[in-house]
Length: 463
Ligand code: UDX
Ligand code: ADP
Image (cartoon, rainbow, N blue to C red; front, side, top):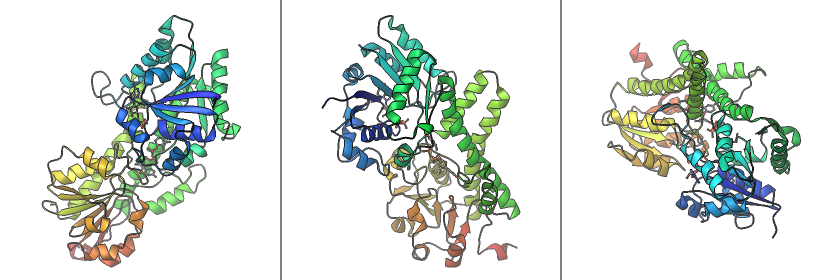
């Protein structure tokens, strides 16, 4: 079959594959190839067991794979053969040298730019899909224009706003698609070509355009605003616990103001995931770099509140369980950074588990999709950890249940049965506020939600 457009994506990760699978599904006349330096990952994408869990992704990959979606290892040939190249490699926080712990580590990204330059034999549209510091496209343009030859490269910024767990629906029906370009004749032409691909299934009014720098910055700011909402509600949850106010009631009252909106106001153990912390630190670094320390401090506080929230949670567990966890068995329900994913990157569960182990607790971790990643995250831990997918088996014989991920499954468990199998007094720390706390209290648990009064059978004696 002769394809209308030949599209390549470099980086077969959480961003690259779902977004390319959607393009392949919606544009059968486009050939979409995804490459990665990690050849095991490519093998897995070509196998019956895909390397990551995302609801709906399997179906769409199975439908398109071998038809117009391909996973390949020959990066050099693929760069040569394709006209439109998405760059979706990882840009983690830099862990060395200037900007360590803050700035984005651009080594993978720059290596990709140099590969594109080295192997290209015809003009290309190069699209930044990874989240990058503002002005990265300029560096990319500089690398690509060092060819001194006839080959021209047009660099676009097209950040991906999808969230894990809902990636497929976000890609199918996004709030907006943003395309940033140079406002030159060739820049506008490239922008129109990319917009034409999305216009196959996304209403035109949702495809917005801007200059490249606005586009790059918008992605960082969108994530910073979302994370800020989580930190805002979490900071108020601390005040609720001191004043007998209830965070769910406060969030509902505040969120019903249409100027505020009701989404992203769930208090919990803090945000995780590969984006929020990394992108805010990147934003903080940029603000400092451009001589704006007040702005940098403002955004850094979002990360600090996130850390504070986890710390509060751990202190609360320790304090409620008579200030000692040594030898106690604690069942962690959920290790993924949010529901409907097996991803554990920056999951609050990592830090919380480590802290429980430092207190010499015995930890039993349960999660429907994230146990493999959990075991990798905690591989260096010397403490007592067990992994059990079945939540009933995991909870049996434990002193406390600690809910760290908002999996739907945990809302539907038989807590009476669980309570019976646990050591008494049994504690329940709902780090996601997903359970019916009164019901759990009636069953017999001492219940500790976030931002709501604790329901403790000891309260009367304590007074
Ligand atoms: C985020 C952005 O939502 C997405 O637009 C961007 O492309 C990538 O980063 P993601 O990290 O996949 O997506 O998940 P998201 O749903 O944003 O949740 C991030 C974290 O915030 C999770 O740990 C989640 O549990 C937490 N969260 C979210 C809360 O604690 N409370 C809320 O109300 C919402
Ligand atoms: P994200 O969540 O941003 O998609 P991932 O880590 O899931 O991040 O995916 C990024 C992918 O990019 C990884 O599979 C990694 O192996 C790949 N990658 C990094 N550098 C290169 C490169 N130079 N060429 C091809 N693939 C790369």
